[in-house]
Length: 125
Figure (tube, helix red, strand yellow):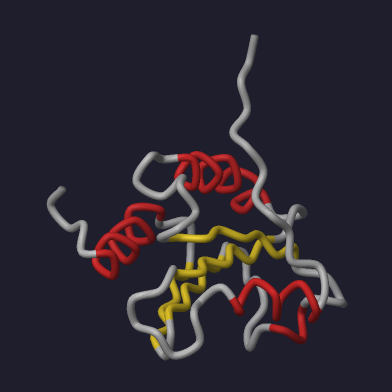
């Protein structure tokens, strides 16, 4: 029997986008990180990346939902205006925490994990 990773909460409108960003604790540099995975299900690279980011979200370092809140945003005509750039044959990861924001372009989950661990003070652990 094949086990699939849990799906991420979906951002489908400006309202759900604002609700997700509200979790980044406004201007607090110590609140949770909000990581938005911008994807296109029509893109084969994104389709291969989706289960990997779902597994990363389920990793015990992040799974409590208190330090990192993961979201997925399918690029559609409704969601495209909410980001400054669109999918160009690659997934996009945007992390927010207070005034801090960082972007990883491409299916670089090692880079995503390093970014999260660096902000959480987990490097080398």
